[in-house]
Image (cartoon, rainbow over all chains, first blue to last red; front, side, top):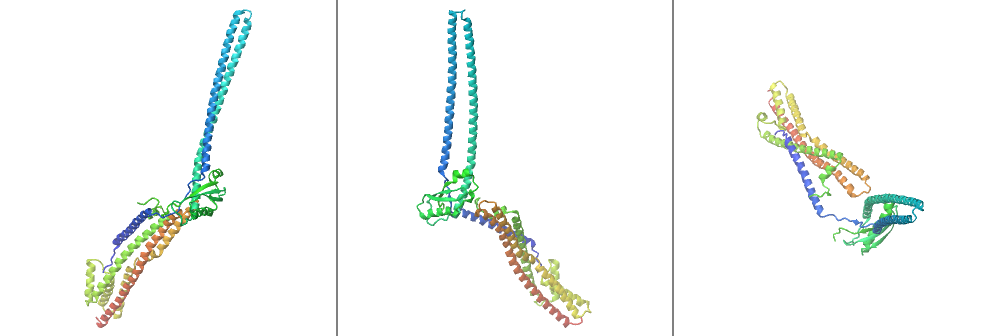
Length: 274
Length: 233
């Protein structure tokens, strides 16, 4: 009948339609993700439990031994200083006592032959005084030298402490690096690991892997068997398939020697349903 | 409800790169506009069909044609304009009456004038019906390509970012590709209804215009009869 010009109605309807479609999409998406959270898809995970525990233990022990040695040396040095100081004190006291005795003796001699030997006694006293002065000087020099040595030792100790702190800091960043590298190894091995159907949840197999700094694997040995031959073989062949950890080539040789020349890899199927 | 590690569509759209977001925006707008067109065309076409049916019923009911014309005029005056087939009738009849009342014009010329007037009204009606259908056709054919374009750009970006990663894993690639695929999905979402609507509406328009054509011929034959049965008036 009429040319229906229903633009406003159309616009309202179209916008409503889109809003409802988008809303429904978002709503169902959220519901889906919630469901997915509950039933997580099973995935294989290889855990790198430990890399080279021996080396790490040795390192710790070495550091402890070093500290102990340092402490002992410090104690001994303090002891010696104290002893030396006591000896010097004794020597000085003895010298003074001797001088006193001599003076008394001289005075007696003086009384005996006062005038005859007065000059001589005088000379003797002068000589004695001179000797005393010299002793005093020597003692002062000794003290100064001792102080100097102490200062030097203190400086040395400080330097040592500084060095130790530095090395500790280095060790921290090293630990991070090692973690990163082991994550890389972990991922690579995991990619190649195909779990045999006989794998069960409690199984654990530990492999010892020896590597050279180019990342090539020298050999793989089973340290701890899971008891299931197929599972052991799967883990071993996963490592052998990787063949070469090219990511490790750029690694600091010091770190490599310490952590990755030989290291242990632990495999366990984590989230099997059976 | 959603855990941070789970991927949802809205998060992907928000996190998408600018070109992909632009493509998505374009597609969303195209979809909205094409739906506006779909609904509006639907209203227009069904109104035209209804109008045509009603008018044909009245026309063939044996009513006097001048009576019918007057009804249409009063309807036009009091409410909205008349449309569709009635417009063609009114144009032809008005021209016919005018030419006949002038007198001294040959019957052939009267018939020719009436037919010309009806043809003009017909092409106007046809234009009204087909308006915006080309937009639907464009959306239907182009929006998949736009969506594909967005997807290609998105995947390209995700691969470029993958190149900077030392180790490639599925978790790195997957969100980028999912994000990119949203663009294709939106393109299809816009295109499918547009194509369906275009095909449906163009066939409807065709049948309507065929009906108009037939009506023109029928009306012309009626006028013809009238012209030649009462000569010289």
